[in-house]
Amino acid sequence: MYQDEILEEIHKYREEYAKSFNYDLNAIFEDLKKKQMAHQDQVVTLPIKRKYQKS
Image 1 (cartoon, rainbow, N blue to C red):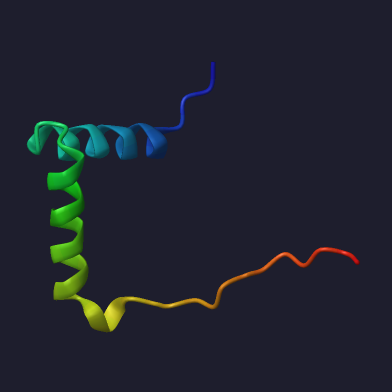
Image 2: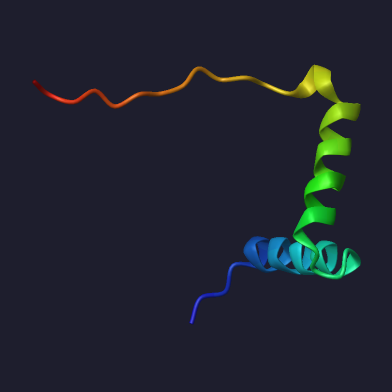
């Protein structure tokens, strides 16, 4: 079976990151918000893509 080294590295990092917060989603969310606030100049806001229904 094909193994993607990049995906394995991403999964390893994600596991280590979650483990560092004892898998607490609220703590992870707060950490990510802090990181985002520290780099506000790098946050991109994209327009909302809407799917239009046919009449």
